[in-house]
Image (cartoon, rainbow, N blue to C red):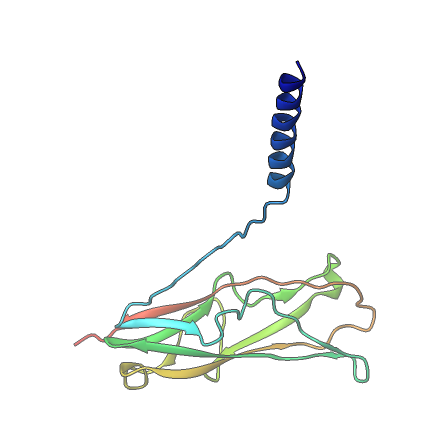
Length: 163
């Protein structure tokens, strides 16, 4: 009887120990994204994190918001590149429309609107180049407070050369 009881206790302890061991497991979640652009047309920011979580810093001294800038790598081996903002120019919003802050977005010196405009000529785009995206906020109204957000998409069009 003692052997059976001792064996049962030893088996129970082994199961308990393995259960406790399993409770201390560690894991690591890994998410991977890889984007390989086409060799003849591409437009992407050099900083792969740009646009994911940007912050415009507020300057208390002069009541203004900072400008955002990002360099892009672009190429169109078969023509020029046009760009536009899907839905038109964006606004920072806090839920009170009287506090909306207009955002002026330019690319390579061209102010973007809802209408596609050439931002790189065929000659500039042919071998690939870099150009700057600049997002400049208007001055906030004096009564504006709170958290402001904006989300918009800049679209780059591959414009083939017509011969």
